[in-house]
Image (cartoon, rainbow, N blue to C red; front, side):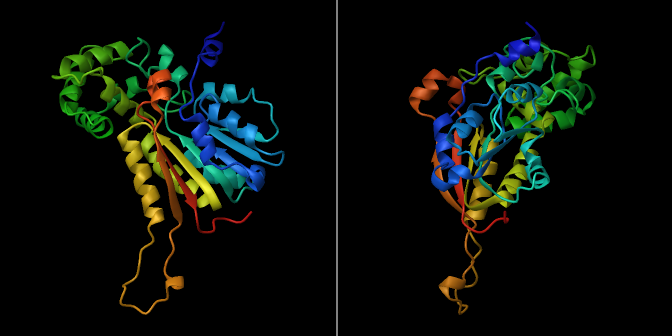
Length: 321
């Protein structure tokens, strides 16, 4: 069995599967609409969306991971199309397909179990492998290349800002000291460097957790792409279109929460001005729900424990079909 085949067959449990697809309200006339799965992963959400779509419905999915693309290409359904790119490009991608507005968009921001569990991808400190961490292995620089060339100060800032790590600059100093002796090319090397630099350990959490998260986020430009993708999603949603976003750490959730809140609160003029209520600025989004996985789901899939899903509905008119 090839490495790619082995990766494709690794198990993956989709977080908030039913709840996320329920949030898109694919029923009645909406079943014939256009939907976007911005993070195909291993296709759990996409497959359930396809089950609920009518014959005239359409699903456009995005993913940067070549292994995810290989999985998606096995889906034989004329209503489905996979795009090998970030969901941040959905505006241009949908325009190129003649799609001016959509009925629902789902963004699951977590990394899939096969990505984490494949040592060759370099995402996990639990397995020794090449220090890569790229979602899309066909482009960009690896984590090892970045750590070999970036300044100690910048490495420290990345670990502090994206990992919320209190010992960020001590870790960066340790990385700089080690790379002066030998290349840091494996996940085990980085995990050992962090373990020696971190003075106190959080209960139940490996000391390398925050550093690996920070480097992964930075290498893949995850937060920048999230901000771009949220605005692109908003621009493409038609009236009553649903946006559901599942985040897995506070940095992501903070961006999602603030974005949705900014669209749900229309700026109001001075109350002393003689303006009729009907003429007041109206919000663009209605906040519908915030949801976490049930205790039962977390028990079956511990990786779901930090997930938060926020759902909003477009109130104002988007693009025209």
